[in-house]
Structures are given as C-alpha cells and as structure tokens.
Length: 192
Length: 207
Image (cartoon, rainbow over all chains, first blue to last red; front, side, top):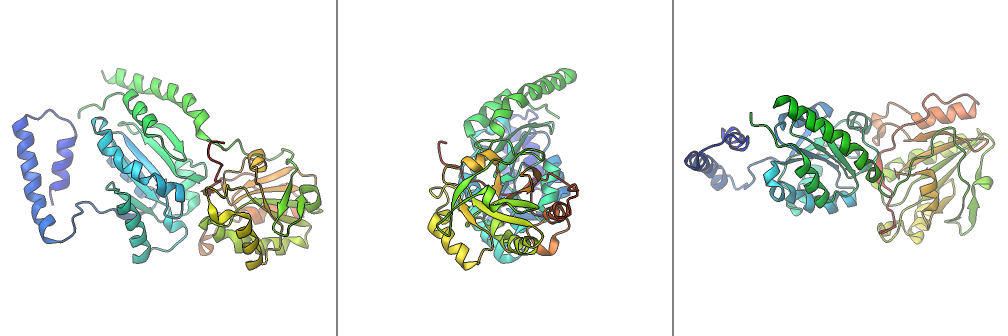
C-alpha cells in the first residue's frame, strides 16, 4: 500500500498548494476507503510490533525530521497505564510541532509473547485511546536499561528533537504543559 | 543557516540539561552508593515486632531489599530472594525486606496484606513496613525490588538489581549472588553498582 508514503509526504512540511493538499487528501482517503470498509478493522496502523533494542533505535531513526517522544511503559505498571490517556493526546494537542509518540512496552520482560499478552496490551492501549505505534520489547531489561540509560522506574519518557538529539527526560508522569514549553523552545524542523 | 541551527540546538541542549536535572529523580533522592555507611532503622514487621538494622545484621553482612506485595516485577523476584536468603543465612549474611510503598497509592501494599503475604510465602526474613518512607529516602530506593548489600560493618558494598532478567530462564548475570559470595568470603565485590529496574516506589502524594 502507498498510504504510508503519501501521509509522510504530506507531513514533511514542503509547502504544497491547497489544491495539491486536497488532491493528496482525496488520494489517501480513496486508498484507505476499501481497507476501512471491507476488513472490519478500523485501525490503519498496527499497534504492536515485537522488537529488541535495534528495532527501537531503528524506529527512532525512522522518525527523524520531527520531534519524538519515546515512552517506556508496561501493563503491570499502574502509573504507566494511568498516564496513557495523556500521551494519547500529544500528537493532536501539539500538532504544530509535528511531534510523534512511540511507545515501548516492557510487558515481555515478565511474560512470554502470546496472543493473550498482546490482547491484554492492545486492550489497555485502546481503552486509553492510544493510536501511536508501540514496540513490544523482547530483549532483556539489562539491554534496555543500558541502551537508553534508564534510571530504573517506569514510566520513563525521552524527548528527541527533529535532529534525533535527546532533549529531555521524565521519570514518572510526564507533565503536558512542560512538554509543550519544551517543544516551543525547540528550533523548527528544517524542511528536507 | 545550517550551522546556526546546529549551534542553537546545541545551546538549547546545554541549557535544558541542567534545568531538567532537578526534576529527574522526582520524590527519589540519590541512591546510597557503595562505600557509604548504611542508615540504621527501626521498623515494624509483619510478625508484630519492631526490628532494627543492628539486630538483623549478619556476622558477614546484610541484604536490605526494598520490595512490596503488589508489583509484578517484585513478585517475579520473590522466590529468588527467598532462595538466596536461605542459602546465605549459613554463610553469615542475613536478609531483610522493607516495603516502602504508600498503601493509599498501592492498596495491595497495606500492612494487613503484607502479613498475609509473609505467611503465604513463609518468608525467611523480616518483612518490615516503612510507613514514613524515611528509610526508603535515606537509602535512595528507586524501585521494587532494589537491593543494598552491606558488609559486616554496615558499609554498602553493592546496590542495584538481583540479576539481569526477571525471567529466570534468561538470567545471565547474577549480580547479587556474586556480591553475596564476595562478602561471604571477605573479598571485594566484582560489580558494586547496577541499575535496578522495576516498579517505581509509590511515594505519598504531595510528599
């Protein structure tokens, strides 16, 4: 499918004329329509994909060009689940910054990958109205802690600039107002 | 333009980092580092008696473990801690578990639930409640489970995780066991500090 490419073309911020934007919009809508109306699944994006530290790094690199918030969480972590509805609002609330959110679930640190575990995680994400993608981390806690210099407790969130540099971290619940201020202080992303 | 962008984001980063630092630990203070004297404590146990560090201390050393009832990560390590406590008692190292969590935040961590858990698991070590959270703050406990291993003099010789994986089958680095062996033999511990991963300590709201 071409929709991913079309959407990202629209987002990378090259000035398009209103007519061109409309054309792209109609094109995306038309290409999505059969998927939405036929399959029964209304989700254009898969919520979960298993991966190790390399997969997380790859996902972060792929999102260069816009600020990115990476949130480390797990279903077994109550304060993590409590903050998911806040995180779910970030991409729309701070849309002008172009921010994306990526979740990294630590549930496989305790449980083996299975349809039941995935359903449990997906249910929590849907209940919290999360639509941003999540990686289901399948390495060791040691490799995760070492790769991202995690302090130990989750939730833990790291904000990266559009250039991929770490800007700020939050241990515990992230404050949306602080995130907003930090995003405003970032230099605007360069058009490619 | 390119160099300006680079310069400004670098400057921003330099400005943002020191500003971010005071928030980084939240309610948690700095961890008690190896070489430091461990603060003493007197806390109520699930047996209804009060226990102090000096009474608990083993001839060779003491493992002070911040843990709790509710946290699945802590529960995953419970049997390992019981096994370690049983193995090292004869080698002169005693264990003590301290629950630092506010039961208003984590209801399963209330004292009555602790009593039930201690009976259910026949815990071989005292299970104490840190109601004021002062001891957790003094040690700089970040998560459950979080271990501080003291030598015979009560000096911290190891702090951090039990091992590298909550899944027993995937354990490769037995950091606590290695440190226990070293303490029991009166040798320097091979790795004295690791990052403990788990559920954050449930601090009192507004504390």
